[in-house]
Length: 173
Image (cartoon, rainbow, N blue to C red; front, side):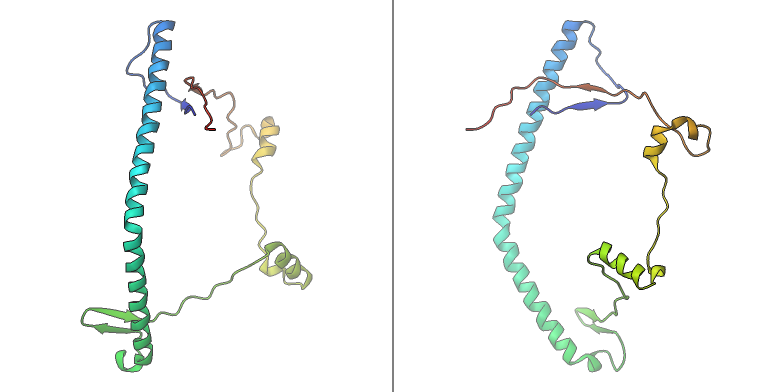
């Protein structure tokens, strides 16, 4: 599949001098894009090979770390008062430290629409936030109504230039 390039500001180092030169440069661009995709595929193949090679090693190390963490936590929970010298939250050991921290309170919502409806029905609307935001679609439909208002600019007529080298699409059977 050909990659489509959009250029907003031309920063050409070489400018074709004729239609023939331009067509030749588009051909070269297509060649470079295809080589780029081949190089990217080769890189991804190498990354996949490396990941596959290291996966069993990493899984074994992860299992070992989990077992060590579970054992350390079990010991520390059982001996917290002694390790923290009474009421502390951190125990400093020779090779590292362990600590206990209280998480801040949090709220999780599942099925937000039904929760909002229930809160309104129970006269608990103070727990529902109403968000005010600018309706950009309406402004695009009526640009004259907002022209001259500070902070608003309606941009129209911007043109992008794109180059799409031809490439034959072939499907594997």
